[in-house]
Structures are given as C-alpha cells and as structure tokens.
Image (cartoon, rainbow, N blue to C red; front, top):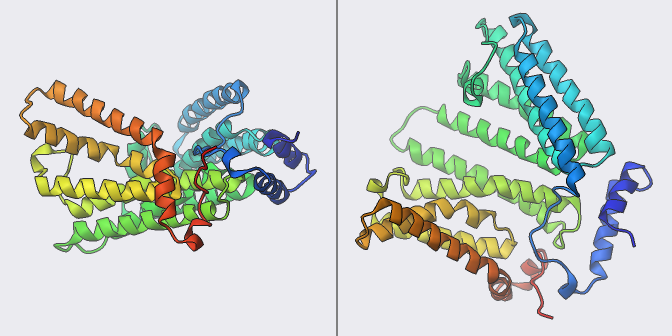
Amino acid sequence: MVDDDDLDAAVTEGIVSQQQADALRVFAASRRPTAARPHEERFRFMRGFNDFFFTVGVALVGAALIHFSTQNPVGNLIAAAVIAAAIIWMLAELLVRRMRLVLPGILLTCFFVYFVFQAADAGWSQFVGSPPRLIRTTLKELFLQNSTPGALLAKLGAVAATASLFYWRFRLPFALLPIAASLVAAAMIAAAALPQRPDAPFVVAAVYLLCGFLVFAAAMAYDMSDPDRVTRRADCAFWLHLLAAPIIVHSLIGMVSPVSLYNRVDLTAQVAWSVVGIVAALTVVALIVDRRALFVSALSYLGIVIGYAITGAGSGDSTNIFFATLLILGVMVLVLGIGWQPLRNIVMRALPGTVARHLPPAAVRA
C-alpha cells in the first residue's frame, strides 16, 4: 500500500511530480468513506526521531554561523551574512528538497530569514553611513538598529523577496509564514508612519485587522482547494492560519478597547462583555473552517476577562485568582475539544450547501 512517505519519496526521485502526488492523495481520500477520514487538524511536522536528530544538527550549525557571521570586520558583515545564508540554502537543498524533512526545514527557514535580515541591516547601515554593531544582544536590537520607516521597509522587503524565493525552490509550507509576516509588518510600519491624528490608534488597529483578514483569506484559499486536507496545501493553510489568528484577535480587541487589557484597572464590564462576544463569534468561525487557531489566540484575553469576573466576585488573593483562571480555561478547552465535532455538525447543518461543500466535511458518526 502506497502511503504519504512513498509519494514524497517518489517526488524526490522524480518519478511523479508534486502535482501528481497531490492528485493521487485527493483521489485516494475520495475513495474512503467519510466516517473513515481523519477529522483532526493535522499537519506534517516530523516523521520520526530522525527528523529531530537532523534538527539538532541544524540548530548547532546555525548557532555557530550566527556567532561567526558577527565576528568580522565591519566591511565584511554583508559578505559574512550572505555566506551564512548560502550555507543554509545548501543544507536546505539536501534536507528539504532531497530528503523531504519538515522539522529541519522549518529551522532552516528561520535561519535563512535571519541571515537575510542581517545582510540587509548591514547593507542599510553602510548606505546611511552608520557603522553597525558587530554583535547584537537581542533580536529586538537587530530589528530596531537604524529603525527609520524606510530602513525597516527595506529590510522587510528583502526578507519577503528572499523568503518567497526560498518557498518557490523548496515548496516548504512554513516558508509562507515569514513571507506573510514580513508583508504584515511592512503594512503596520507604513500605517504607523502616517501623520498623527486623534483616531490614529483606531486606524492602526483597522489596518492591522485588514492584514489579518487578508492572511486569513489566503489561508482559506488553500483550505478550500483541499477540503479533505490530504495535500501540501493543507499545511500551507495551517501556517497562514497560525499567523492570521493572533492578528485578527488582537486587532478586534484593540478596536473594542483602546486601553490595554493587560492592565486590569482599565477593564470594565462593558469591555469584558465585548471581549466575550468577540471570542464567541471567533469560536463559531473556528468551528466552520475547522481550525482551532482563532480560539487559542483568544485564550489570553478570555483569561483576563475570567480573572476580572473572579475579582468582582470578591476573591482578593491574586494567586488563587490566577490558578482559578487557569482551571476554568483548561476546562473550557477540554470541553470544546471533546465536543468539537458534535458542535461542528450543528454549525455545518446551518450553512448553505454551496458554502459547506468547500469546507472540510463534518464527521459522520459510525
């Protein structure tokens, strides 16, 4: 019996194309009864401990390259970063394109994006005549060095372009995440650079929300092209949903409450109920698209609201409030996880058939 690993190996050896392998997966899924199809939100992460073994090697090599790429004369920083990125690319040729390893590929993508950003940072520093520091103590420091809007847009543009090239070459679904994240960050920087107005926080939140919806739409395009989730497109959708969910949740909450929800003093009953309504609506959307990222991203805000409610009930011990909140959140997650498919059956029956057929089918009880 031919399984996914066999198809991946056949693609690597050039026996079939990636498109033909995906078509075979769809065909095989269509011949199985619906009740026999898996309904968990799965994505390919690792096939065995061998993947983890290679990941450890990639992590060690990448850490060493980061060290040596920063221990060079100022004039060689660009060359050092480019050489490091080239080494990562060659490793990806072996581990991702030839051996089809996903987990090492995710780490290689992260290292590749880092070195491209480092090269762009050094190049911009030379362009504006500001010598870059040889060693950056934090990623935040690397990102904010020479942090004019033009500088950040140039660096993010370099990351988006090279990450797109990386995705085109290796077809690694995870590579879509840094591409989309770079574009979202660029849009946010452009919005923040607009002339300050009284409604500026709302405008920035609206731009952020629009970015989240666009990433969500891209994820749904992949999902709707493979409702049975048997091809690589489902993995592409997973990573885009993972990025879109916190953007949508955070921007919606920001539009409801301009103050920080992490400061409990600023939280009111009206805002708390608004947050509950947003979380409930996003949970319904999560059930419809059969993706849990939206609900998971809202857990922190939901936890703040629960803590606020417990405090209002008269409990003054902050430690007890914290762990009571964890208990309630944990029970909610477990109940929703157990009842996910029954709830989804109810929601899917309420949808028009023209919409439902483009979504993952609801589980059928045996």
